[in-house]
Image (cartoon, rainbow, N blue to C red; front, top):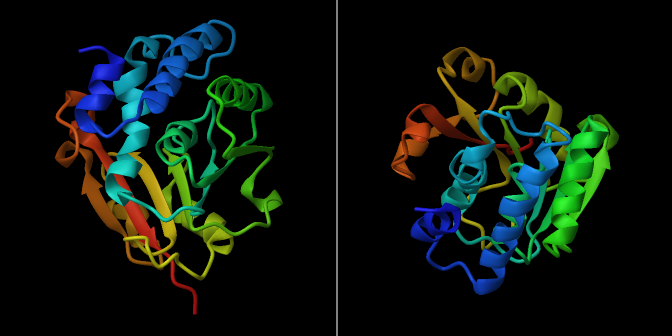
Amino acid sequence: MNGLELLTHYFPELTDRQKEQFSIMGTLYPEWNEKINVISRKDIDNLFPNHILHSLAIARFLGDVAPGTSFMDLGTGGGFPGIPLAVMYPSCRFHLIDRIAKKLRVAEDVARAAGLDNVTFQHGDSGECHEKFDYVVSRAVMPLDKLVKLIVRNISPVTPSANRYSNGLVCLKGGDLADESAAVNFPVIEFPLSEFFVEPFFDTKKLVYVPIKKK
């Protein structure tokens, strides 16, 4: 099945507008990747399963979220997982941060072309962001223990009442996380992505949820 068929297989509720936005991503990312390597050139043909659908594992986990729920995507690169999630959650707010300006430029262009008005961008790191968010999301940015320490101060203490999961970190990782998890001072809950998606790419991939409740 093609990219859009893959997405609608797992997310049959996608609107025509969302399908159009994902189609725009399917066109622009390969074009940009010829100029700026935001995805491995060996992997760009797998844009939909390995990058867009992978990002949407977070939506599969969170389910419906309250309008106005805020997300920070730390180390977004070319816009993953933030841009696919912004398409899925048009009534939520997304702030995408990365240290590499040229990759962020790709994310900005894709968001603009897709008509995403719920996304903002910041060139730099989380230490320069003083806002608070309901969730911080990321995709294989750094070891889990270091990531948690970095973003604790960016987590809002009040969870929107309609959300299924308390505020915290939701990130996409791979491999054995035992050592990383052991150094985290909050609960660490792992979900194998093979429970969400059947494609072989997801056999070793995990979603990690760290609820962050401050004293």
